Structures are given as structure tokens and as C-alpha cells.
Length: 300
Image 1 (cartoon, rainbow, N blue to C red):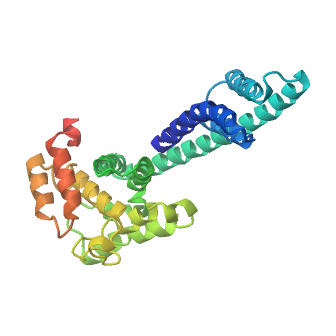
Image 2 (image 1 turned 120 degrees about the vertical axis):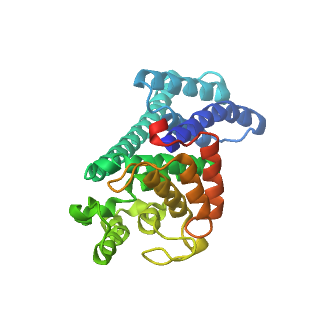
């Protein structure tokens, strides 16, 4: 939800800037720029949708008086009331739409987390794997200076990256022995299954989430699956999640082995720089490990 918070701050600051500048611009230019008052009110509704309606009404009333003072100092009470009613409607409509948007985004987030937990619950050895991958991936993305919206999309993609495993039989996922060739081919289908499961969600087509689901097992040297993409042919978000996914796999206890030591994990990831992983992302990830920004779960 971080991008929503950032957007709210933008509209809040925008409201105060417009509240000061619009009257000044009107006085200086002597032009009718009344439409900018409507923009001021829209920013008020978008930026302060979570505050109480009485407070919103008071702020709206302040804007009405500000405009009345700039226009002609004193205005007939009937005109002011009409303006107050129309301005209040604009503010409340903007605030209601924003609250509805926030509610939808919150529900999407909760549904995504529920899906991820349902998937992880199939295997006690990989419990919280999806959340861990999402958290690691966000830290990498922030260190790479990706914006808040991109980080939120990476978080969602990290939570859903293994969703295709719902189509893989549980006896294969839980198998302690080495997989047969046929079983491994079934496992390799999970990115495509995940893509097919989520491809009808329109937002996922444009924000990189489907790329994460489909391509997080591609390798930088082109030897991954399902498409055999190479280098920067692999979408950036998928390259980030690939490193986070591999780290959590090595940092977690599995049926066939215990948790690897941090030094061994760092060595393994560094060894596969330029073959399995994007070298730039590995450098960022190793830095985060060394400064303690990313830790093995048992150390947290």
C-alpha cells in the first residue's frame, strides 16, 4: 500500500500549494482562473479522504471564503451558499472515490496474501516462502532505486510467483527423494500454470506481475525455463525475484537438507553471477546481505 500513501501525500501537498498560489495568481494576473479552484478541491478530496467529513467540510468552507475574498472581498450570502454546496459536492465525491479505491486495493492485497499463504501451507518446510521472497525482492528493488509503485508490484509478484504450484501434485512437491525426469518436467510447468491462472487480471498484464510469475525461473545465460530467455530479455522484475527466490530456498530447511550457512549462500549466489543471475542484481543483493539489511529467517 506504500504507493497509495505516496499518492495521498502528493495530493495533500498539492492542495496546500494550490490554496496559496491560486488566489495569488488571480490577484496578479487579473484573469479568471476559477477552474483551478475546482482542481484545489479535487486535491483536497483525494489527499484527505480518510479524515472526518466535518473536517473536510471546514476545509472546503475555507476554500470558499478564500475565493470569495479574492473575487470581490464580500459576496452575497446566497451566492456563497451555492458555491459552498457545489464545492462540498466536488470534495465529497473525490473523497468517496478515493476511499473506494483504497478499499479495493486493500482487498486485493489481502486476497493476494491469502492465496500465498494457502499455497505455502501445502508444505510446512516452505511456510512463508512467498512472503519472504516478496520482502527480499522489495529490499533489492528499493536499493536499485525503483519507485514505490514498482516496489508494490514486485511485492505482489513475489507473493504470487509460485501460484502455479497449485497445479502440481502434492506428492511431488513433498517428495524427499530426487525427482524423476517426468516429475521435474511437471514442476517446470508451474510458471506457465501460474501465468494461465492470472493472465485474465488486466492490471497484471501491464505492471510486470505476470512477468514475475512466468519468468522467475529463467536464467541469465538462457538455460532456464519456460522460454529460455537470456540476459536482459528476462524482465527486470523477474530477475529480481529470481535472486530473492533462490536465496530463500537456500536459507530454508527442506526435506532433503538443513538451512545453509550464510557464507555458503553468499558464495553460491556469487558463483552463479552471470550464469543463473543478473550480475548487477547479485551485487546489490550481496551488499544488502553484508550490511545486514537482508538476513536468514533464523537470524531475524
